[in-house]
Amino acid sequence: MPNQSRVLMQGNEAILEGALAAGMRFYAGYPITPSTEIAELAAERLPKVGGRFIQMEDEIASMAAVVGGSLAGVKSMTATSGPGFSLKQENLGYAIHGDIPCVVINVQRMGPSTGLPTSPAQGDMQQARFGSHGDYGIIALTPSSVSEAYYLTIRAFNLSEQFRVPVILLTDEVIGHMREAVSLPDPSELTVAERRKPTAPKGEHKPFAPDAKGVPTLPNFGDGYRFHVTGLIHAEDGFATSNPKLVDQAVRRLTNKITDNIDEIYEAEQREIADADIVVFSYGGTARAARRAVRMAREKGLKVGFYRPITIWPFHDEMVRNAIAGKKAVIIPELNLGQMAREVERVAHGTTTVIPVTKVTGEILTPAEILAAIEEVR
Amino acid sequence: MTQIMLTGSGGQGMILAGIILAKAGILDGLNVTQTQSYGPEARGGASRAEVILDTDEIDFPKVVAADVILAMTQEAADKFSPKLRAGGTLIVDPAGVHTVPAVDGKVHVVEITKLAKEVTGRTVSANIVALGAMNQACSLVSPAALAAAVADSVPKGTEAVNQKALAAGIAAIGA
Image (cartoon, rainbow over all chains, first blue to last red; front, side, top):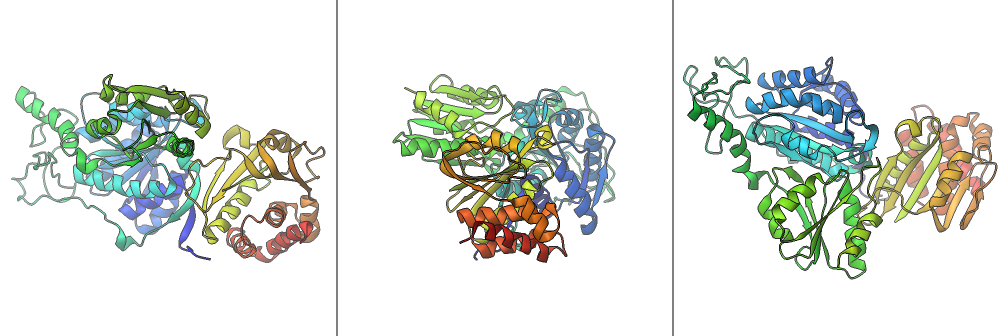
């Protein structure tokens, strides 16, 4: 019996294991289906590894606690779904503006509002990018398997620390509740990013002065540095400013630190794109049905390729443009009314036909439904 | 690829049975996925666990056309038997299924709940009896892997009684 090191694990369980492996030691949350297993496991596991779990009175407070935990120097996270993700947006914006690293797991369920609590959906794709007010950059990752959920959670913490930005693990009920085999690596095989600390002497260090990549180096609360964190637009010293030049610098930096480093952040899986007439662009749980549909189409002799963004935000215009250039059509199956098709359409700019395949019944898309869309292309 | 549905009503241990089968698949070196119905559907009404076993990478994690369906209740048998592929195998427990739905495949009527009561004194081990019967009828995983997965998944102290339940399911189908 080979492969005894592989264990059966649920997606939500893999997320929590990945978080612990990445060094997460503070979880503040408010349980909500279909993410609840993450909170349950965090409550059980964190006290055993010197961490802390706290259930707050609601999602707004839990996001605030995550911000506080991170400012104190502890890798912090929360997990939620639709309605909770909406509530977290205010303090998520605070974390973005304060360059405060943290990880937010969103196990998407059917919306809007309370929606269908136990049904899968991918309706928060645009909210993950633009859910908080004002201009900013953000990172969101979308796993398509339980094993990938484990590794992407670790990557979410790493990117969060490297770019001092909240990272959203934008998963869905399909992946969150599915069980699959996962090979857990030895911790020594993992790359785990740790937070950079200031080197300038106390009194001279500017907490929001960017490095070459646009990322500042904040001290942790308790390190002995005196500094100020605010949701008001602030200058490099952390204090509020309305000086137009400094405001412009501060706001642009929040977007540029992501877009300028997109090649370091972005990952996508591409299969059989080169000779393809048609490309299926799919992500998250739906990508599993899409991958099957592409195989079925290839078996029928149709030239179909597969493009799966693993980093969904930032959106890599150039990579997507290259993948769909000269193709007859790009098909985008998703459990919403065309949220990512909108991005692909923007990039295609009329040069490639964009065909959204949408489903909002509370059920998942099947390979047959996606294959039918492929076969309809003339 | 083998697509399996374990169906019954909430509380009959269908999800645990699905997890055990998936664990056995891993022990045999297979790729596995295990999914289940959640929510109101899973409470009281017809509920299901699905398992896919494959030597290849598994794309779609849900059952499209079942090779094997276990049905513990009439409602589950009626609701899920249309998912059986032509030539597939339906296994029903007459304690819950009084009218076997017409299917284009093999049917095994196995006294799963009755055997569980006789052999272990507890109907709660019916899901383990069912696993033994399913595996004997359809050779889903190796017998050793299934026995090991059962031992790994049941509450401590109940290993022996559950192995008896597994053996009873295997014997009910016979060689």
